Image (cartoon, rainbow, N blue to C red; front, side, top):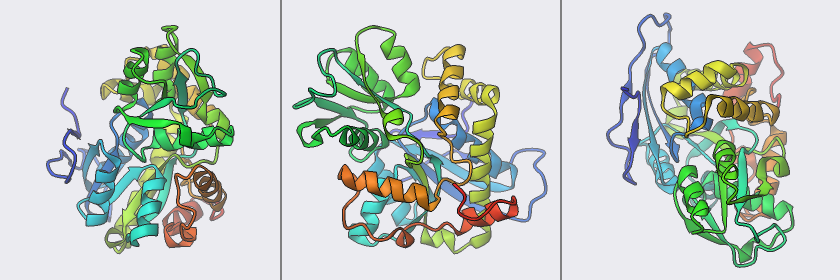
Length: 339
């Protein structure tokens, strides 16, 4: 199947990507231009909302270059250097870049306002006995590692006694723990379903259930050069929020898009429907832009407690720009700052 994106296997600069041209039959639209979007990590069932985001922008006349970069730090460097206009990633890395280097970037939306991770463990490694345990992660600072540390800290676990081991994406981490190579693995809910069915692992912690809604797991960042084009930035945020509302309201279409993209992660149709129900119940998608002050404050507080966000991070006004989300909300007859 001809894919609409290119999966970047190499770490580093954003180079060859597949261009998503404006689709045939698109409506007439006053905004034109091009946008380069990078997403830290890889494609999976939980990111079909982002695919819909790119589809909407293309429908509205924007030339979209969209790619994945497996290493979160490399994805961040692409944004800061201007090789990418927009980045989708866990917020902790970007907050660190603003804190330590004064990076000229801003969070302008959030797509995941809850965590969908389950912490898998080997039998004999319950929450109360994790000293010396190895924790499989995608890369340092990736969403799964941060969410796991936040949830374990909330459970009063001394995370300094847990040792991160770089393994790869959710599928790779699932394979590693099933083979006994690591003690713990934060994996997406869908991967957890298939792993638990083998009987080889236990659910050590429901990370999403432990943290609860209002925790920003994944967010949309823009470099400040891109934000100077107010009209294009507003179009991007409009389509970003619409993609979240689509994902939150269209169970069967979401599953069909994942099947079309070969992003099912080996899940059956029934399992994908169950995962979508988990998303909906957990308020996973950022249907109102995802960056209300209540959510920002909770994410900062939990991040600082778990040392995934530096304690000296500047006030959110230095790295959050809610103006585009608020413009969208007002246009749709909602109060600015709505959660």
